[in-house]
Amino acid sequence: MKGPEQQLVFPLKAIPEDGLEIKVDLPREWLTNIPEYSDDRGTHIEGLIRAGGKLTREGDNFRLQGEVSADLVTSCCRCGEDMHYPLAGKFEIVLIHGREEVSGEERELLAEELSESYFEGEELDLNPYFQEEIALQSPLQPLCRRDCSGLCPMCGQNLNNGKCGCRQDEGDSRLAALKNLKIDH
Image (cartoon, rainbow, N blue to C red; front, side):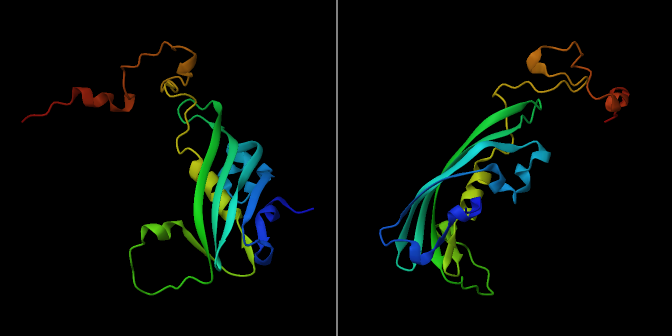
């Protein structure tokens, strides 16, 4: 039986002229090379990762129209509570067979070059493109809800569960001495 990463590796000769439909369910271990999704960080995928799309030939090159979805379990960036975040994304990339020509000069990338990637060899490994889309769809600052109140800076109580009784107008005690500072103009 193939390992999960092998489900998205295709010999070029096995890709028909009219293209190839892709539909695979991958275990969360498929993302083990991405440190953000290891269980020891508190963020992980629950259930299977669904990856699919259409791979079509364009001469010696290929076009991948892909989509990926998964259920991300992470912590709210304000209150720290565990939450589920549905990941879903679509992408399109042109895969160019051959080595990218690199010149020593700096140049600006054209818009169409942002959706191109080069590959060599007689196999096409689609794993990095689907993994990248998972990373791009992951929230930078996940919120359990839009109006999350976060934690009290004084006592640490989750303010979504009710007020804590701390005086919020006191400010940072380390700056209390500045209240008495008089500035002459």
